[in-house]
Image (cartoon, rainbow, N blue to C red; front, side, top):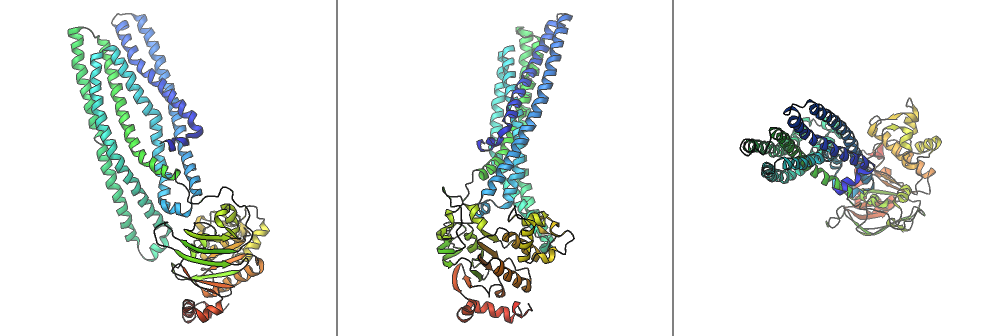
Amino acid sequence: MKTVLAQVGRYRRDTIACICLVTMEVIMDILLPFITARLLADGLEASNLSVVYRYGAILLVIALLSLIFGAGSGYFAASAASGLAANLREAIYAKIQTFAFSNIDKFSVPGLVTRMTTDITTVQQAFMMVIRIAVRSPLTLVFSFAMCMYINRPLSLTFLIALAFLLVVIGTIMVVTLRIFMQVFRKYDDLNASVQENISAIRVVKAFVREDYEDKKFARASKGLYDLSVKAEGLLAFNGPAMMTAVYFCIVMVSWLGAHYIVVDRTLGTADLTSLYSYIMSLLMSLMMLSMVVVMISMSMASIRRIQEVLNETPDLHNPEQPVMEVKDGAIDFDHVNFSYKHGSGKNALSDIDLHIKSGETIGVIGGTGSGKSSLVNLICRLYDVDQGSVKVGGLDVRNYDMEVLRNQVSVVLQKNTLFSGSILENLRWGDPDATDEECVEACKAACADEFIDRMPDGYHTHIERGGNNVSGGQKQRLCIARALLKKPKVLILDDSTSAVDTATDAKIRRAFAEKIPGTTKIIIAQRISSVEHADRILVLDNGAVNAFDTHENLLKTNPIYQEIYESQVKGGGDFDQPA
């Protein structure tokens, strides 16, 4: 909990103010029955009207003060709890920004979303209860018990029996339900994953008429969450009967023993017995509220642990102590690199990669699905770190660079292109926030994006919907290429980023690259040989290893894999028989 409470930050004053006001409210509430007893004994029973007025005025002032303290504590509790939730969301979001892909893979996207929504809301509610009810209830319990001891000590000892009984029952419930709630939040992850996957791929679902299958899949996830929730709530239901058992026990004991002390021993007055009943109810109500806090804390502990996992996660990638702040050129060297997504698993995505690329070269990368093409380029911009060997850019190991500097000079258009809500210009300036309108236009011309932007009603000010849903796949790819070009990188990586454009546009983009960024090292991953045949050299990957690395002409003569791909695309009516 220290990790979470450390995020209270500037709302610590509100938290302390709430606790102080709750304490004052409890003191006022404890005084009310005592003053009432004095009013009855010294005023009404003694028929002294002036005492009645005096104690009546005191009761009015105490009641008003209690109301003011209660309202103030409620305000500060809401402010502190909401502030904690806001700080937690900001802290988790900031932490996620430091994560490497491997860290995000560990938690999964739905799991992180659940932590930032459901888990933090649970913690917010628990924190509000803690600084109000969890402060109020123990204080009320202690003060009420103290007043009971002051009025009649033997009668007060009956409360200890009820207290011991409740501690055993509530403690048992808390231990068992905590384990169940840990499973409940994992089920929330599964439910979010099902929703996210279905909505993001809704076109595919409808195209293959899989609505019923997805409904059943969601129903299974929902049923699992329902079963665990019912199990947990069923256990929590024992809290109420246990509490009422303690209440009735105390009332019976005080009534029976109180009558004895009034009638037989005459050591207790009627007014004192009346105040005892008030303190009994205050004491037992505080226990009941405390049990609710315990239940809420039981639920929140599962959320706190999940939040703590994110906040305490150490990013797999970090800057060296003295990072290099300049990339010399676009030369790339792979020195006997081995890489796996799970270190120590023994399943390499890349094995003994030994490559040397000169600055300014255009390199094509081709291979079957799962051959390691994307894994290879992810290492160049240090989205992952190698297991063995080294990857060098500009003659230096990528682990020696400041990551921001490296990634600004190694621009990547990933396989999954993403645009953000905002205008086209705003999306382009992700590549360079200070880029002028003219620079944006030039980048779009190089990426052949100006062709469709000029046809749009608002041109470069056209609004892009979230995810780029109002542009086609090819248009999205060209905008992402233009965005990457604005960084003016020393290395440009296109990870199958022209798959959605026609071959004629693909050829125009390649020609623009050759003319406008001749000094930039260009790595083009593609499924079509027509996209890479004009490259200086072509890398053929097979099962995570280098199968060949040569020119198009030489590969056609010597490499069976390249020959097979070429023949299948030519004879299959692929790109090579399409007019440019």
